[in-house]
Length: 272
Length: 328
Image (cartoon, rainbow over all chains, first blue to last red; front, side):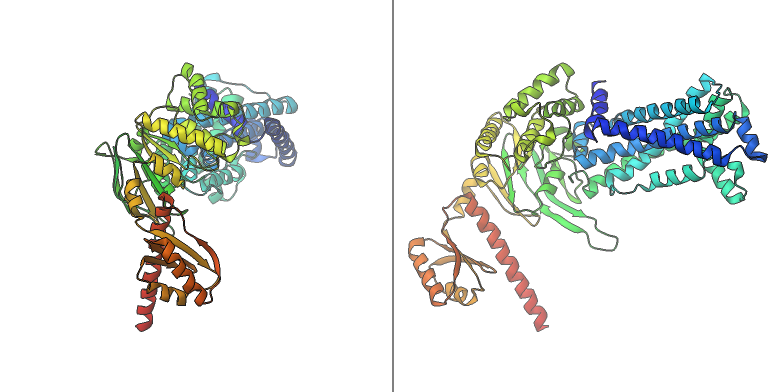
């Protein structure tokens, strides 16, 4: 527990000053709300299949609020795992992590937990503000919420470790896994609009294949429709997202191990 | 205790291009309770060698044995305490004391012991007053002290100290040198990478000189001093001293002569007599001397001599290759 406390403390102490970080977080939340407002006005409820989907999940504001908050949580969460590695490499502390702690994987997850909790707090705050400002009504099924949340955490860990495997040995520039994640979630996962609006069968097919689409839909069912785990819509989305998450955890761990071995060959652990 | 056998390290560059070879067949041994100093110019491969011994780098070829058994990088990391000669490696906005507590906790030290042990090692390295300061506010020398303090947090069988005295003021340097002597007295096995020949000559049981990834001399300090059966006369000129060098080569009393561009190293067993002869030749050849020196014999002299020998040999080899190519 003491290591965990120190790891969380290092987040505040190791990066930018606390006041600046708080200011940036507040600015991000406000920007998110602004974008949300803009999207609800511009997109509107519409008609046809799109309107049906919005209605199914309690309206356009509810649909978007859960999409924005959940997507932010997932994205920042998996960034946190890769960021934990790149921050330590930048500071030259990663080599000492490797020397001091034989179970590096565990340490990396512990280190990213602090950032993940911050992201979660930010996402919850965003969600609460959206609910308060735009009058979203939600009907939460607590068990479904917990299960979808737990599966999402696994998915984030798996993809995050895969992304971190590139940061541990490669350059500290753009991470292709994080880039691909951002691209697919922003444009394909249906954060603001249901994927039913994509008329093009290829784009629609791709959007359906993106796992995050199903993560967002599962969370919407859990918190907006009071759907139980037996609900066929929630179960279908959760199964898809769950299979992806369960595959990604061992794959991410294996890739991370490979990344560490590559770092030992390339010498990135002794660079400072 | 720890031994390397034909260690090579090649860094992959780009596909289809030859790898960059940094360490070439290094074999060295650090006996239990002994101190082995590695000396070498910048870029000689010292940090890469340290990385392999600390388990932070995988050798391309060769092996590292620990207590007679081949050791993997994972195994080496369990046995090594490492003090690197870098500025980073700590959390900048956290106090030195808290940094030490953090790394102590990572190693698995019990929490009640952390605070006291961090204070102890800060005292040992002479940094107790700066313990509460943020790491980023420390001077370069103080950062070396903090690195050494972290390496001393727990007792490990093998201590590697990379440039432990670099950037220190004279008083602190003496403090750290005394500490290293105390650590040696306690029976700690150590590998010290240093440019400080005074430290190496006093502290080391064995010295290896590394150049371009190759150990070019490895011996006990006293044996290395025996290499200096002759005294060196060092001259540096403003222009190519080729003609003077040709005449100096004919001086039978000079035991060795090494030339590297405008620098000439003459070795003699009778410096008083030969210094006059050398100067006479230089004056007759109308050469202007930029610098002349007859250094006192010491380990520094040995270091410079072996480096000069190697540079000389390389230059000769290049000339021969060039001549062969031209003839062809």
